[in-house]
Image (tube, rainbow, N blue to C red):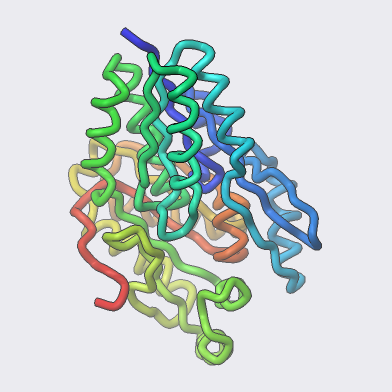
Length: 297
């Protein structure tokens, strides 16, 4: 039986502990600040996280790049040389071109490694929505499934990942060009908080709007409670962009009281997703009903 290595990317927002626990590696994207590129690490410290989001709170814009060709060559070759087949779980193609770059690199590498296989999967998700699919893939690899079998299983699970996210301010979305300046101004003025989901085609979509921070937090928990299937068998994941410890504990307690899940795992919204969504965003993830909503519905 060939070994299978599960690889994701910087958009997956997996913590260092989860990467190690499940034996997952990731291809690094880059953040760009004042013209300087920095690899987007998921193993950053709380101090690193706070410094990153403080830059954004000060009004500066951080941009991002997709995974460079050289990075895909490095990480794919590393595991091909070790005798592994590869399943790469990528950020949604609606949010990053990385999966397409990976496919081009994989096609070239397979000519050098004809006995190996590389599957590049568009997760239709980002942040921990992508991350939970990588975790499930790693569990299947641990059961000695083939790369083909894992790819088929993950492709079938993509639309059952349910993500509900809310933001503190619309400023970062405005800077990233995802919200018009006028809408951001009046939205902030009126305390409007969009509820953002990964829709059926992998686009980040404003699913609904709620007035007030507390109401938005309650709403994302209520939405996941309604969407999740067999919660007692699964972990609910919470990812946040440098929210206060009190607020993180609040949402953890709310999830624990409303959703009878097996476990709750808390991590950070990483630098790639964070650069677009901004500080104090918070999101929850779980497997459940198939996502059918599309942007514009």
